[in-house]
Image (cartoon, rainbow, N blue to C red; front, side):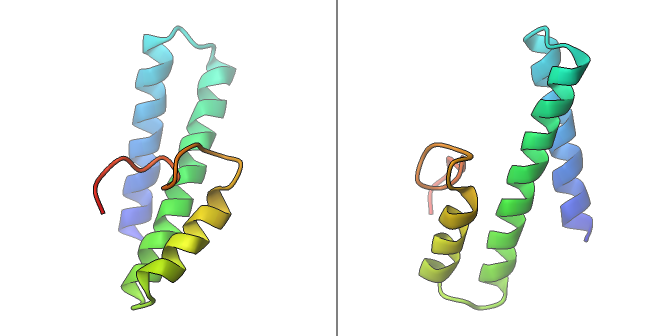
Length: 82
C-alpha cells in the first residue's frame, strides 16, 4: 500500500514539474497526472505479479496487454534493463 501511495505521489510530482516546464494549463496538468497514475497502476500490477512468484513471461505479457494502446515501446514506458 505504501508503495502505491509513493508511486501516485511520484507521478503527481512528475506531472506538476512537466506542466510547469511546458506551460500546461491546470486541466492539461491534471490529465497528464492521470496518465502517470494509470501507468503507475499498470507497473504496480506487474510488480505484484512478479512478487507472487509467477513467471516473468506471464507477468510481462499481462503488462503488455494492460498497456496496449497507452504507451509505445515493449515495456510500457519502462526504460531500464531487465
